[in-house]
Image 1: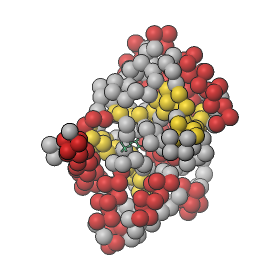
Image 2 (image 1 turned 135 degrees about the vertical axis):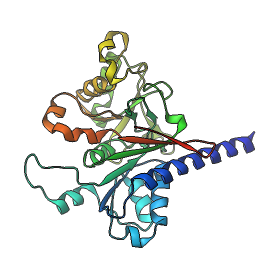
Image 3 (image 1 turned 90 degrees about the horizontal axis):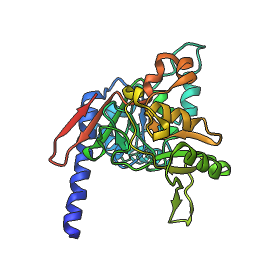
Image 4 (image 1 turned 45 degrees about the horizontal axis):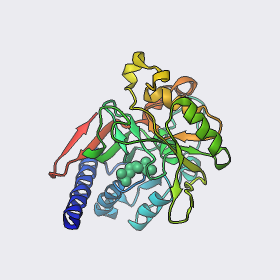
Length: 285
Ligand SMILES: O=C[C@H](O)[C@H](O)[C@H](O)COP(=O)(O)O
């Protein structure tokens, strides 16, 4: 039994590696200057593959992380870390209406991906910095294995991670219940026996909702019956006092989208690579 489980784990890790290697083969260029690196276990294979290309390819590049784990991963691989504030100092601000998509590309994993490439992220407690880096990138390429693939969000994955201010966490939890979330919980860290703290010193609330619709199914939306589109649920949760960000990557909605214009496209992936346990891969775009 234990041997079978170890074999399954190895196959899944191999699937993640295949997805990352193919994603880099198709999308990475030695001409890149700024590369965003997300969080989680899958992204480790992106960093491993870039490092294997050698300093002749990567020495002139700067890698923008999405949290402490991501920073360590980049540094341990011998690549150059550039934090978001330093990136913004480096590129400067050239005035209203100019592009903020300074990163050539951003690679990251996901917990679940739907047929429209909307994602749930934050299973490893990283979502806010990931959304910032995605917003600053020309192109978000997602890497995963086929377990993450679903027709609609919350088909297999059970909850939406929401990053909240600790002082407002219970208030947010109550408002999530009013929105239709069944038993949202503040994430606990068993190792420290306290609530888990994110890289931004906040809590995560894991909020289960019924399976979401696609954004293209907005005409079926009926929050009273628990039927939400990813965009609408994101906007609604983000509107709760005390919420920093929501672990749904589906593009921005409402006034933020209007204000930001076409650049908001950077928030969800443009292409996903799913590694398969038979050694192959499939893509979705
Ligand atoms: O909070 C973590 C991030 O959003 C990860 O990208 C996501 O959880 C996927 O992680 P993994 O590659 O470990 O499945």
